[in-house]
Image (cartoon, rainbow, N blue to C red; front, side, top):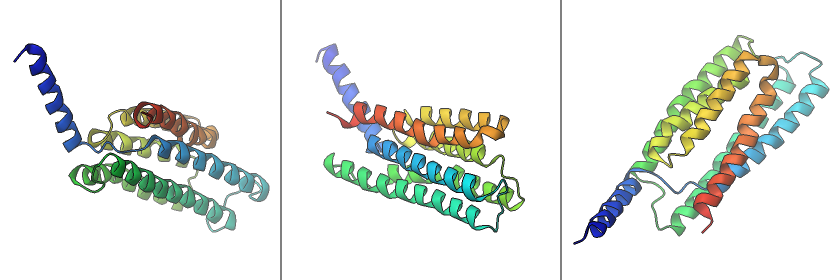
Length: 202
């Protein structure tokens, strides 16, 4: 066998190892749609806060409860969309949707996310609203970075950008809402578009 044949065999073995240890059926369209959901949710939230909160956001008030519901719906729609599109892509590629790599991906993604969610609930119960947007970005970014080793490695760059935006939001809490919009809205759309044309379009 020639050196080219050996290199080709090594490359094929490496690809097989990557496929067995990483979940690579994530869809770029998921990121795009998640970003759109976030922008719509942010627009509705902005309307309720500026129209009905009168400068005060009470934890037991209906405006705050509406905002929590909007955030829940954004997350719910993003998850459902992600599951549907990922399942569809996995079937198209002849890959399993639920295996060791996908379980590791979900576990490593959820650990920072759940811890962050609990921490945010604690500070909200203490009436501290200013850091919420920044903390959401930071813990979400850490979740992406933590899960990236079990999926497409490029996800970590989205995670880094979310963490950086979260830190900026904590430095300038008055702009936390708009930085949240950039992080969860526009960054998802930009990254999802990149992923779609790099991995989905053939």
